[in-house]
Image 1 (tube, helix red, strand yellow):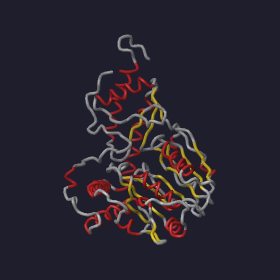
Image 2 (cartoon, rainbow, N blue to C red):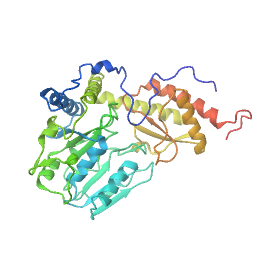
Image 3 (tube, one colour):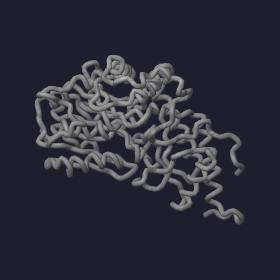
Image 4 (cartoon, rainbow, N blue to C red):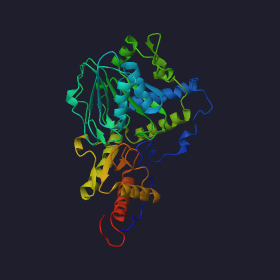
Length: 380
């Protein structure tokens, strides 16, 4: 097979930080209030604008609170866990590396005793029907490291005693999220909209707020995680007054991404772009017998972090990945370090379908270059 003639305009397919949106330019950040305090009226207003536009674009219910918190999605989900858990028994669902970490922290850091863990290997989803909604539930919506997603929120009853706490970082802005089924949800800027790192978003339902104000966990809460003062929720966090110092430059970058999302048609357009990208890979896999989805079941297959296995031994697979990077055809597509060896293409809304199509042409060329012995034509 001849080397493809064209390369992707943007060969960035990392699952985080993700590709910048089409047409991105630093010029959009020219009015950033650099050198100003984040606590100034201007600083708070710009941070609150990110909160307001996020809530509007995602269709988050009016009575829910949205705040900017430290340490990306990891900080946001840990904040939710440390503030909300302990009042009742907990069920934890995990099917990839990060959900496993949240289970570890619940069991080994918070040391909760009434915990049930439902897990599945890479490429599979646990039996969601086993969850007891008298308990609190902690789960990831989309497995960034496994290419598996929860297909919908039907397994969560509208009437429940426990709280639902969801790490939704690679699902928000790319999948339909039934906010009324979630009591605490978290995500970061660097995923579907391609924002910058280190800032998390925390979404709280009225039921979660009531838990925070009525319950005091038995463990000390570090300042960076504190959501309550004198028995009441610190409402300023959800109005632009952050716990620590945020980057106003990163905030303006996130606002630029939100403006782009609005300009292309909002949430429906974002979801459609991501789903169309997944279809490109599905078509490619259907036409080539040497590449396979880690998530074999299409019903639970992620449309953002698309994980694949390739019929190559690990050392040859690494050669393929390096070849694509050296050619400038696809960057950062190796599977997560704890996942089975393979490829992972980010297919979120900021990825152009045309770039993905070209990258797959290069993938086919690279596979043929690696899998067949140079002179004999014999397949490895």
